[in-house]
Amino acid sequence: MSASTPCLLDGKTLAKKIQLELQAKIAQLEPKIGRPPGLAVLMVGDNPASAVYVRNKERACQKVGIASVGQHFPENTTQEELEEVIARLNQDDRVDGILVQLPLPKHLDSISLLRCIDPDKDADGLHQVNLGKLVRSEPGLRSCTPAGVMRLLQEYNITLAGKKALVIGRSILVGKPVALMLLEQNATVTIAHSRTQDLEAVCREADILVAAVGKPNMITQEMVKPGAVVIDVGINRVETSGKPRLVGDVDFEQVAPVASYITPVPGGIGPMTVAMLLSNTVQSYARKAGYTISL
Ligand SMILES: NC(=O)c1ccc[n+]([C@@H]2O[C@H](COP(=O)([O-])OP(=O)(O)OC[C@H]3O[C@@H](n4cnc5c(N)ncnc54)[C@H](OP(=O)(O)O)[C@@H]3O)[C@@H](O)[C@H]2O)c1
Image (cartoon, rainbow, N blue to C red; front, side):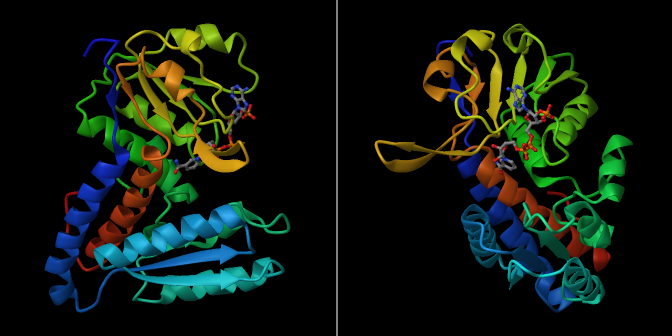
């Protein structure tokens, strides 16, 4: 692939393909197990972006045949009330996955809530047990956005072993797990963050560049090595001429001509994240009933 003809890493199309595969798996398993897979999505308060994400997840569940039990709680819900809800869902045999939509209102402690989720039902892969398994390269539920990045790279047969990979961002949600997953695939990984000096020079070294920052268009053409693979995890809402639209952390127009592969925003990692959430739920469902499935 020459640096002047970038290939779009089409997360939307791959996510659809994965959903069809999941639908077929569910159709095979449901008569044997006697119920569909179940995913509980807990949302607290009225964050409009979260409401959109939750709706998308519920729609995707419906399409593949996962029973999604959306639970919407008022802004002033207490930690104890949510812990009780999670404890009940942990015991509920119809529920295979539990997801707490982040961010939560400020008075709630998200880390301790995530800890209450049964690690085998941790659809978002953010429980410390599952993060620990990732550190040890043991099988376990993987966090959805990083898993979506890796699945997309795999789909396009992008070689990672021996490549210099740079992850910009070190959150538990994206940056750290994606760095560990790239390392697992034998990339030589660097993690950059807000204190990194001369980010531009660090970026220009990267064969694989993953941006997970949350700053619109911060990665410009000068920062990208010609022929690099560019993965844009960022989702930023901006207004152009009074119209709201979504952009990534990468200036797509500028960077696409120098990259070998690049993800669009929207249509890149966003749909892959939802596909991985469904995949985690179906894997938990199958495993609980004693079936091993490969996805
Ligand atoms: N596509 C999806 O499905 C999906 C899923 C999750 C998140 N996202 C998006 O991905 C982005 C990141 O999410 P997140 O939850 O990881 O965000 P986060 O928790 O706010 O982390 C952002 C990271 O970026 C680093 N950073 C901030 N400014 C920087 C700079 N100027 N140079 C280098 N690094 C800088 C921060 O460094 P410090 O640690 O030093 O502060 C931090 O590690 C957001 O746009 C979010 O909306 C997308």
